[in-house]
Length: 442
Ligand code: TRP
View: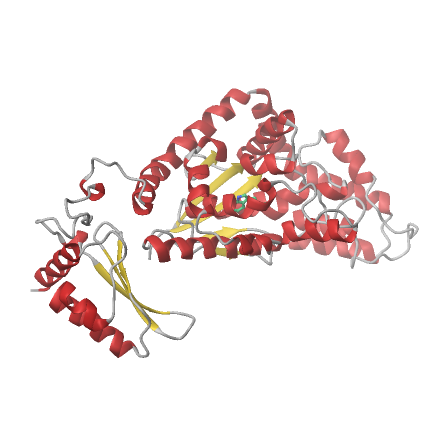
């Protein structure tokens, strides 16, 4: 089995809170320690620009989030930990994907639609206040993911649509230019708790009800003491169901500790006492990390160096891959043989036309079934360029027979089979490709 690549991004527009820690940081750091996976964690600072126009906030949040992940135990020597804006190949891929992404697909994105619906409801222009950045958000996110051919993307449910859109864009690109991208899957972990905030609603920056993960000890205590509870008096039995205090406690406690708290609720523990228990439990887990966090916050140059080293590792993958993608779409050196146009005006596919054809550089036929129920094949040159895209066949057998005939007869069989080569691919290139395949089989 190939190593599973797991990738996720964190938008650098806020300060990490307990909900981020329980829902994303802690499970990710744990997962990054398992074998057989290669983990990619990055600070999505280009995405942050879509949400905020405050430069100081973006910089501060980038440092806070990086320091948080490091303090939580992420080992940058075992994973790829980098900052999105250090990888210029990502905006470049964003453009390549922009050109294969249907505008209608983006029209259907939840976040964009929500803005339009809000405007429509209030009688303003549908796109009022909507930047092209918000509209393009899913394309940038797709580039983040498929640049590294991630198999799995751990995200919250609100992000599932974005992963599906990334799959769509990857598939469109593959269809047009050959199989370059792995189609990613969203990974939703149902065991991960969603924490309630100070007011009992989901802990979220947008509700202003968060407990910052690394609030100083006395501030943490004050916030915990302010947690919303019901008005039951000391001595009265209390409900764990729907209790924000209990849910937060449970997310940090062992099952045995949670059971003890459950008993204390039944026995009528005073809210003040329960809050004190929660505070002590939180602080026990956070205090050691807080020391590391404060160290990084005081030494931003250390964090900067770690991120730059991470970017170098990421670019060792992204730079050569981007060269391949540029070539695939036709952004090529005019001096390279593939880009050369022959005197008769027809381009040759490298590899297919070259005299020395090795096994690893052979053209390939790919057969597949489309949504229309018909069977198709495509022919890809050794360098990945698409040479021929067939018409639909009623049965796989007929499709297979067409491939066999093309292999045996080359360009001479095209008319009889009702097939045409893609623009820029000449019959000579096809003949050379078929000869290479026959030779490899003999
Ligand atoms: N959109 C994600 C969020 O708001 C952040 C993000 C950006 C991301 N690029 C990504 C997540 C790539 C996963 C993969 O949570």
